[in-house]
Length: 589
View 1 (tube, rainbow, N blue to C red):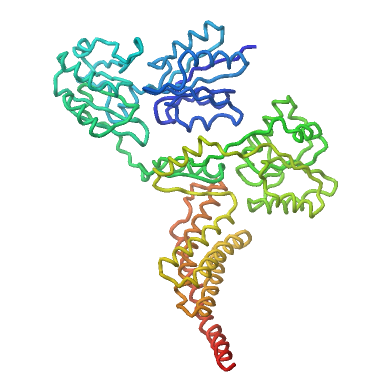
View 2: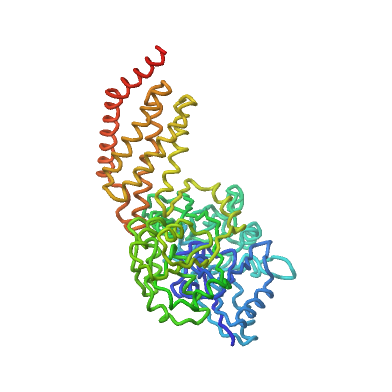
């Protein structure tokens, strides 16, 4: 049985420019063939089991000849798959979509063309240039900057004819032939002072624009070293400036995001709303284990299980895909109760119309395991569905409490070499890089090196560096620990007090000013608190609260100040006399 093919226009540059229908098809397809002009973010919308095939084309370096792309489209459809051919801009605007349709017609493959936003209109608009404007341009003409003719790249149009046309001239894919285009227009009679512009990487945060008179366009463009893809606009409207005036606070800021997917997706969406350019720098990839014998046995005997446990949204998606691949009726899960590790996993489950029976108050493996032990009966069976790299803490606690469980590997997390190369290169261009993880205890790990580095900046003695690091780590860890069962303000007070007390003790041991140890120990605590509270907001879908507000920050500062003062008083009243006695005792001996 033949599959179907959809030629989908991805829009130009900005992934937000894809149509709703195109996005819906992309999310549902079995395979996607994409090119250089498709945004990587769009590929993230595909299913985890979707086959992604790169057939990119760019001037001077074709990844795959057009004939092979046509044959591949036909072959994938003949496998019975729903295929999306994702093309930059619009499939029928210099996208060779017509050739692909002819190949599908010849093979008898059902197809549909889904139009996209063309760069011929959207890119000039992003630069503030309308292609038509009353009294200036009543028409616009879209011309390809090059075409295939006997192996050479040449203009298809008679350039002197174009020079005499009224309206706006828009050249696509013409950056490498800019001299030929401008010289031909000038020789054809186009006035030298005609407004012109070249827009590189339009509609993206990397957009750059050069405006000049036609006679100076080449020199200014080459001096600016603009890169392809680029759109060339020539005509009176190119002298207009109608760019949007809404200001975004993070516009132009490049932020790299790493960490747990369920959290980083929310962070990314919020940052992009504020105008930032966000790039995910993770290079781990999911590899579903469809042929896993243990999974096969678990699915066949799933009616004997009482609980199903998921530790990630990915596990939920892959589990239900496994059911579909084996044509297992979802009604066989009727007797199951579901437990999840956090709200992200719960949301993935709720999309399937299933609501978890257990969700721990603290979103980590240990809390999940202990909570399960309290709700699962002695005769009940637990089916754990997760990654091969899942934490052993879950099964250790269940085994200790003598609970019956089966731990099934749904997928592996592998390193994608191409993603790693991209992440390493992209990281060099970032202004900021964030790290967010579902486990708040991970925050404490940042405090240890942070405290040591700050202590080194204060030129603290080497013998005190370790204590500074320990103080920072302990303070952050205690804060996170206490936050799980008491108020955040009491937690920050206790954390600060203990960190300061440790610093006071170490300062007397090493006979150095206490501030040299205390300040480094406390400095990571403040950004650590902000990071942790931001993580709580993201994990609980409360991003609109905006993290720490001014009032909260003032209360935090007050709690820390009281804790510092109290620890200092205790140190002077009790620690100093104690250490003096110890020192005098040693001297007498």
